[in-house]
Length: 102
Image: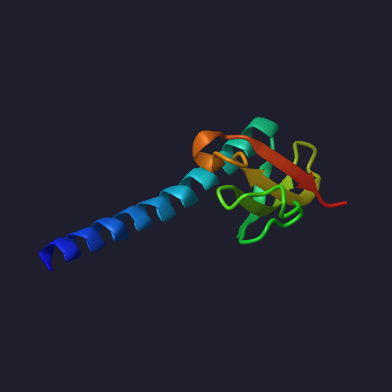
């Protein structure tokens, strides 16, 4: 019984660590991308599904955000940002793909 409780607590700890580190890492990648590109993030929302990206090109290991940003010229742009790679997700790469709304 004690061994079962210990095993359950380890599983819960790993689950919560993965969940919170995943959210934190995604936010860091998004903010680093915005800083590199000179954007001010006005609004962002994490999406469960791929947003503007095809569901066949986005894996569950990647994070997709719906975003609204302001560029250096003051223009507001809206679109989607996908963080990570298909197989490695956000832990293997800080790769970012952007798809702007027209």
